[in-house]
Image (cartoon, rainbow, N blue to C red):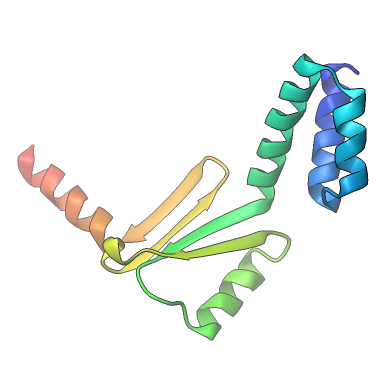
Length: 114
């Protein structure tokens, strides 16, 4: 299998799900180098389909619904991290949108130090 085929396979499997039969096929048909490439593409595909949401406190049902509507074709991974102070951080692939109190304080301190 060439690199383009491995990428297509990984993205397709990420979209439709990984089951035992598919896992067995991948493990039997791919050599070590191909398997490394496949796993890399599979992780990238999953990252593109997942939105990571970190909040300082539990989100209300209305906030969760808003996020589901905003990212309707994505899987939401919601985490609670009280260390953020307040606000919300949204991560999609390599993009991070940070509206947390902790970031605001750190930015303010950095501005005062310059």
